[in-house]
Image 1: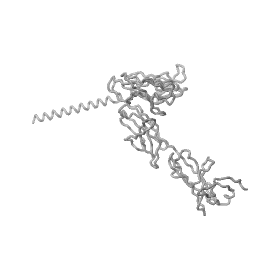
Image 2 (image 1 turned 180 degrees about the vertical axis):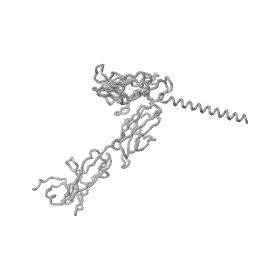
Image 3 (image 1 turned 180 degrees about the horizontal axis):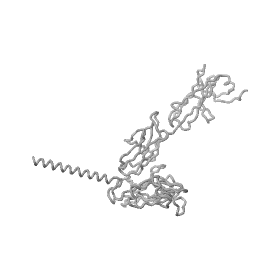
Length: 448
């Protein structure tokens, strides 16, 4: 019994080098012949990366047939994919991934092939991810490492690191002159300098077939100066109201640059992942009055680093502000805590709870106080520096906040004093040795 005739984009007739669709009695024609089975190959590989070039090829070997017309199919699509023996994707995308098969006939339409086996083309979009260790907030001389990784594709990559600047809305990437390129994916600064404050990104390159990832996520590094002289204050302070680093959405947020020397020209600037570098006056929900920036109704994309900047580009007092939609936040100090002072932390809830609601408090992942309305440290020391958060069994867990501890005197408490003492002692010994040698030389001359 004949099957119903159907229109196929079937290459039974050659017309100026192209195969055109005609009516055929499909089952009768194909049942009377011994049909060869095509072979599909994908070059350079079945698993490739987005943007690379890839070619699908259909080969049919049949006795007595020297010229074939081809039809390509993609699983899940009703239309014919291609009528070429080789189909090339110049720049493959994720939408091109899938299962492909082909069939064909000789150019006279007297002989058909079978349908080939399906071959799967996989397209990946590897992304470079940048992280910072141990932290983004640095003091001059601190070590820091930028870590670049390509997850799920851990081998065969080399890495480069860049600083990012924005000018007139355009992004500019500047390759670090000493950027180490290696499979390790680490860029280490052994002694941070003030001029290394900035926004950093990385990129990965695959060696086997040249492929570059997109630029990674951004990371902001902030390097502050060491205050050596006791009693010296920075020229400006950033005051945040409400005075905490974590905030809920839809609340008003005020940031003000308080100048110690009564000079003018300070303004609030910020860096966020979504919007990049911005002035307060350019924010849709923000307004600038003098040195005060007010955000009328905060949203999660307001999360970022805020600081005071002078007209000459001098920067002071960075503060990491985070904005959260729901749940629990930690009330923690905006600026570093001085050694010897008291530290009090509270758990804040979006919906006002009973005054006696208790929570657990953690430092660096370890429980330090449980079932309490507030966490208190009476005498803060350098050992109390770390990441803190609180957790309520029903209302949830707050994000983590970094609490920094500064020395109670003007000297740096994390190793600067011993260094100064060591240098002073060394110079003293050197002077004494020189004096001794001079006296010895004079003595020998007089004796002679």
